[in-house]
Length: 315
Image 1 (cartoon, rainbow, N blue to C red):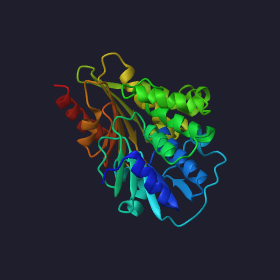
Image 2 (cartoon, rainbow, N blue to C red):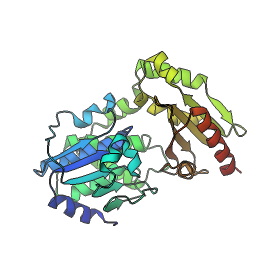
Image 3 (cartoon, rainbow, N blue to C red):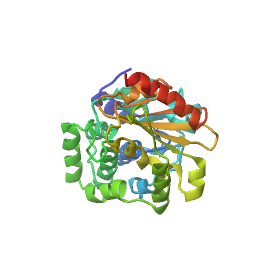
Image 4 (cartoon, rainbow, N blue to C red):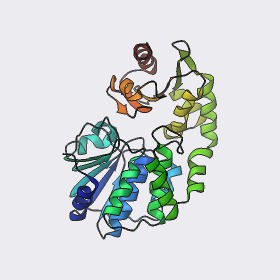
């Protein structure tokens, strides 16, 4: 059932022992939203904690710095920035049919939760979480502001993506007013690279391929590249946007090999192509210009399937 911000706040006010789920392969928005909401609930005197199926990249450690999350048996389960249950990764099997509330901004949301707060016009779910926290009557302090600003800036590409709206800027300004360290956060998120990332980026760019009259760019990140460089999968998050920075490219595909032989594709497009339609063809989803999908096959097989679908979309 769809609900609004006020209804969401009323529900959360009446609950306790609240478990917040972030999606697998966590990014700044799911983590910023999860830990921002968790901090707000803790300020209300509730028991709350955030869990994620995958390791949280070190650049996001600040969002839960000095945060003491209690242990408890969950009574209420909330998913943030999760369009479909399978995005929960290894947590999906346990929580698939147990999610009471989902707060999201993906128009591909499958309406899997009992209650859904969905704002498809928000550049980041942290925009909506900001409204929920205000409706809860919780003062947004610096720690919460840092969490929410992290989500805003990462999901909007440092406010460069077309999904960025006037409201995104308004919320960002209010977060800075409340102490968000925007300079540091943007530097860490967009300008700081590990040596292992730099090494795997070089290999990835050397193997860049073009298809469909150079309108499609494909980068494949293999397990061998991880072994050569010592890079972790979460470090390759910044590679996907590189595919659409090439002049003339309309669809950028970044395919990452998994240890189990499967793979994941991150899709980036411009306004002329709907990335979510391409992802949906393979059971994935996301936004118009940034989506993703999973394949239970090799990277080469996935690439062939994706290129065929790209040909259809580019006609």
